[in-house]
Length: 438
Ligand SMILES: *[C@@H]1O[C@H](CO)[C@@H](O)[C@H](O)[C@H]1NC(C)=O
Ligand SMILES: *[C@@H]1O[C@H](CO)[C@@H](O)[C@H](O)[C@H]1NC(C)=O
Image (cartoon, rainbow, N blue to C red):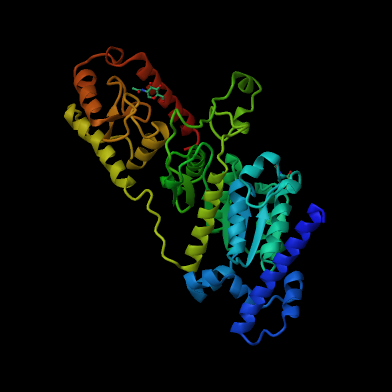
């Protein structure tokens, strides 16, 4: 027997055994099921009516976990997954395995050889075929009773209405697995406008620590440059909260994979902004450890299944952040009074503190790179307080800055190294850049 032939026989035997095993179990449990032959036919032919008993057996563990009500709620969902890559393929696969009612998967792209390190189902034969067709053909074999509808198209604002609502789809939940900033912002804004529940995926590039993966509101993500850009652009459209987001709070480290700065050649070619998901980064080939997008996808599927089923979950990230922001805000007001400012009002809103800390200063002091006991300090005493003239620093650094610069009259150049001064200037430059979108 040649190899292909023996694999085919083995597969047939395994399939038959599994199918018969299921039938045997069901037949034993429920004497309404009498004919193994009839059931086998149903399994093979998805057009035939699929026995509910078989579906319930396939989902037995989920029924045991979520209860009948919970699973029924999930089974009545119509979910759209936009983006069928490393994150989307896992999310879609687990939604189907968990028995979602209907799923629509949207992606214009094709399976590449280099995406096999992170894809949920694609194999070598799928390379070069549309990502959505690949998912459909594999997922149909897992749960022929799930309605899988695919759109091999680019999601954009002009195609949105047709892609989201066409063919009477009537979506109940949207999954954003897009990695392009502009499209991501458009999709999230579209969901906001149409009051569609949506969960968004942050960036998995350069991440490797499973213990740092979180689900939190988009207003509270950390260490995720993709979500950061999206958040800032959404803010400009007046959308600030109510988007659960999967992200990793893992901090970058010089010993870890990093995004490479844009090369001068790329800049010369122009269009860096279009190419890049991030300001000043080249993203043609992102370092992505294959396991991470998968975990994001699984986190997304788990979040949807549990929240739709009414199962209690309470993401932990971000809960204490507001206390931290308030402390930092008060530290600036305190300084105003200490340096004898008559008008102690601070012309920076409480809501700006998270922006200044997380987006502009990357959560740390430019003087020491320390990220605990942080305060805000006026920087140049000859200028008014604004986002262009406050610096995040530690409590000790603030005291030193007050003593020497704000009260003592020393010049900034006398107190700080050229490196620190340049870093502060580049943070202010980032603020000017981000301000266009705020
Ligand atoms: C939007 O997507 C559709 C396909 O879904 C495409 O035909 C059209 O050219 C796209 N429009 C823009 C502005 O990219
Ligand atoms: C802080 O980190 C930057 C890189 O982000 C580095 O250039 C600088 O030397 C560091 N400063 C200190 C005091 O370690």
